[in-house]
Amino acid sequence: DGGITQSPKYLFRKEGQNVTLSCEQNLNHDAMYWYRQDPGQGLRLIYYSQIVNDFQKGDIAEGYSVSREKKESFPLTVTSAQKNPTAFYLCASHTGETGELFFGEGSRLTVL
Amino acid sequence: GQNIDQPTEMTATEGAIVQINCTYQTSGFNGLFWYQQHAGEAPTFLSYNVLDGLEEKGRFSSFLSRSKGYSYLLLKELQMKDSASYLCADMDSNYQLIWGAGTKLIIKP
Image (cartoon, rainbow over all chains, first blue to last red; front, side, top):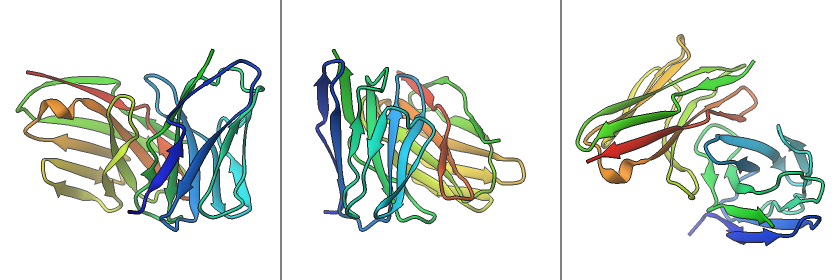
């Protein structure tokens, strides 16, 4: 079945370490997104990509990096420069026009 | 500017009806989305309105008034499993979603 797969579902990290969250989709969608969600808050856009080899910063890009080498894949790296990385991270994809945004199951990152 | 407003929390009784309102102010408009999100899970799609009026889908209905920048989600015959957060999102002229903070709906027996 078509969908979006995020991994890992849970991740623990020590301060000062970089971690990479995986996001893969087989929906043939052009646009992919990374959101961060903190308790009791809405979704905040980190990065998005509308085409391979191109991506744009969202509202809270500082301390994060992404790549889009393949249409299917949009990994997110949480770097040591991100001061408060503990959060729920959601990857999503979209056709690029109007219509439903599809989400992965999310990755919960905890910094120890 | 871009802004989405919805109530922080609502409480309703099992079997009743509840209406969750959402107002938006964005540059351009390409549709209004409602998503349901259970605690610790990803949001799931409920509805998409791009034209004025009411869209009905089973127990859930969504209404849009573009001239007023207003939408609501109507939930009928409430069940305990409807306890969740309901997220309103507006798609702007660049096809980017602007998200509200979500409305936490608490269903009581």
